Image 1: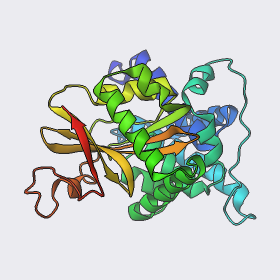
Image 2: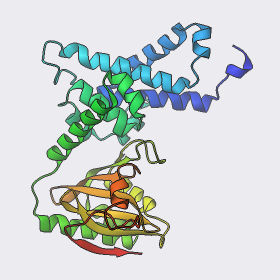
Image 3: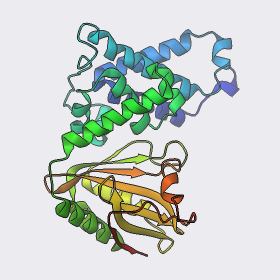
Length: 309
């Protein structure tokens, strides 16, 4: 190894932490995640020097390899069970060692919900929604087309919404959405956090087109902070209630351009999940509807609420 091959220790540790996070989300087990990462590095060093030199993005190669190993561990136990449910893992509850940090960041509720989906669905959702991998990388790992992986991830999102959301009246949903808008307008983090479930989760879908958070945010305070940070820079950033998927949601505009659409899932009278769409491709219809003139007026809503600026 010459000096050009030396990698800063901070980058090395961050890389391993990233791979451990990927494996833990995929498998839900600390010990198995450690084994997967060890195997990933064994495969890396099993390459010839020439082979390693041809890899221009080692971290991407390592992540793809780790994801493939995880998927193999999920699929193998399922062969006699129709391919569903065999990927269940028992999670340790101790907080010792380096995994204590991960345990504090990962929603146990979400991990348990993922135990009920198929290995391919879990892989597609985790790699796309949690780690923000490109659609091509996800497809390579899962062994499906990009369109099929997108559908797999969509099914998981839909299932998570069903599991976390309890029936609520449109009036109650509308009231909570407006309360969220008002708390954001006041930049009141405490008030916003009080509207969220203690284990609330926020997902940020940038689609690899904007520098959005790669993973979900957990906990009412952290979700509140992330939303207020996202909505900073008033008055150019404005927020209004708007019909989103048939329920009251929020539309964020920056200089009149729709920059984000936020949908809310409710459980036990609080916001359980926040879904923030930042992907410009998915916002195209909001900014280019008939009669909008490209001004960002968005889809025709069932109702139009007041915004703040």
